[in-house]
Length: 628
Image 1: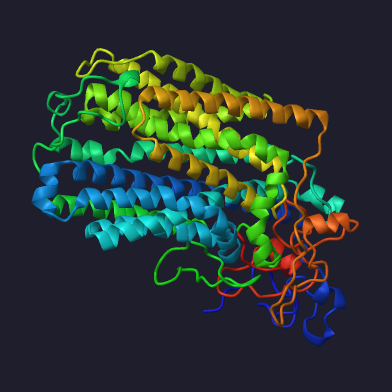
Image 2: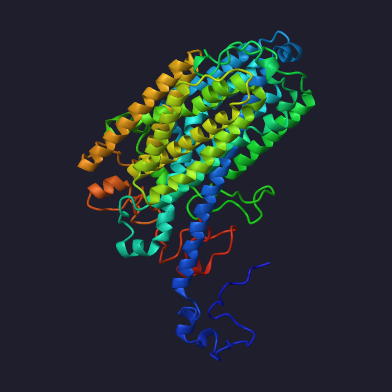
């Protein structure tokens, strides 16, 4: 059944036959103004305001859904890996369930795949992001995490190790895409909030430098508040399932004689049997099925919606195959911009991460990138295992990590202080807090099987989480402020997360070192990172110009490729500015722009089966579906 028009169509016969409600004749004798004139009750300014309000709400929905998807993905991964390693550590479980299959050897190779494979990520991550696009890379990355979960239904060498290698390959592309996506959403939100200024300045004019910074800070705060909750959510399988099968501390810590700063390696002397009864296979399958379902929900949260060209929507009102429309449906770039980003040449895309080393800002931030990886692994291994499990038992590991995750999630909100304080304050506050905690841990060696000091462990875990939240939120916000050009953001976040992966690899290699050596490396890295960051800020205050590599002009090789409008040229933003302000298809309106200016003439494509155009779009005769 045809849908009635939102506004009466001029010239259509109404209930009065050949005359409309104003008593004017219809048909060939109708006045010209009645046929072509605007609808008398139409308020263009009000419809425009509603249009951009929906755009802003769509951006917020995208940020929330991407944050929730990242949180669920990492929570499932951490929870499954933690439960798997505890079960495989118990020698009775290995002998009864798997016999002589060599499960410890499989676990060691699996950890090698997860920790070593990301070292090569700098070579392929920018190519994958530009080839698939930011949103598809997020979807594929979450899918590989779900693949890793699914292989635990059948634990064999040929299932666990290949999936671990695939997971290691997806770590850097996934989180680099997440950081890039949140930054792009902040720039789009600025555009939709200041659409009147954009119209006054012209579509080819860049927004002021740093104009999107407040929105970026808020969005990064939202993302990391969700992300750090993953450390708490990952402990739910331990709390509600595995803890019922664990021995108490008197059995597991019977041969442990030193903890904290006096310990060597990871849990030296820990009992080889930690399970008092073996969990039934049926119960394990139920737990793994729940984790698999959560991973599938995370995939649904980040699946891309717009898979057609500009103006096309391939989703019906009832979804596809009976599925509802996904919460995240907007791309980070227009289709023309995606083509521009990948059309600079695959050789250039491969080289540009290395060429960005010329920028002194990145060189000064590398120690902070490394420390960012060190401190998370220390919280999960050094503090939680070397100080926590070593003294109060394995059954309290989950509660320590819950305290860390909740502290980090709550402290991410403190990053909003950057709206009123200088940007250095949150980042240096987190570094200073970690410095005090590290110095305190140097002189603390808790006694095994003594619970009187457990409150100190919880306080240390919460405070370490506070420092982690300030560190992650401050670093990601700083990168989004320093690098506003959309042609560079995927390279910058790739470098950031690659250095974090290198730090995690170093921690994996040094897992057998004494605790004092680990604390010394952590402290030295923190001091160097802080001094290097302060040196960078001093250079920026002096006005030292960073040296950035040139982004080549897009070269389109596809036969028959056309832009939709004349002002969509093949220039990137940077090329357009150097060429005298000309606009480009790679971003004619600057970093904060994502969409074509609303056209005054007929749109390139009809709204199709997605939804009925809104009043403002009808008046402008533009595309029906929103990009969010």
